[in-house]
Image (cartoon, rainbow, N blue to C red; front, side, top):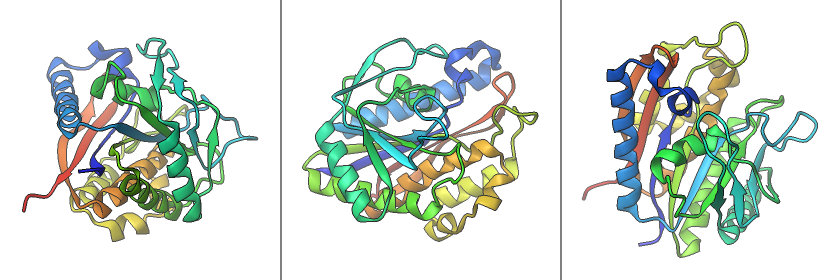
Length: 275
């Protein structure tokens, strides 16, 4: 079987990897166990290519040159050494990157292929847990969730549909990883705050594959969960791709607040429905 064979979503809070011992041991063990389940699932799916959808952290782009969506046409992409991430070159798959760009642009998604992207914690924290040897080629997609205007949710949804289409046509086994969110504030006085009400509501949309509710989310609704909450666009993209592929969501981990890291940790996987 080829196409989109599996998917997962997780937060990418940098202290999870950068300063793990700040968290209470029981919470840390639970989070590690969640990543272990996701890693086992990736191995079970045997992908030829992993597609990550994550957010910009002013690592690759500044306000005067920040595409709504970007991917890399390079054969490898370097890891940004930060928060415990070591320098490395992550292999990519230019042919599938090109196919994804073509499918997305055909759907009106303003995605650009750049000659290489630096992979910071937003992309590489999940990869360091799920495929730490970088043995599987990774096509990174970066979403602008920093600079106004942000891409509309409708474009994130179309990106998901394009991912499914490109995977179906590829003859490859594709695994998608969404990284980011859910509620958090970045670099301001509310850094460390959460909005549990929003998190529960959003996770319920994901859990029940409520694509109509996900599609109806407005920026104003997301704003109440923090500027970092706009990273949920990656989850929305993957949820729509997974639904088109016949995959159903399963919540792997719900840690509503982890002291020390000052984050909530949520993890989901999309699996093949049993018949």
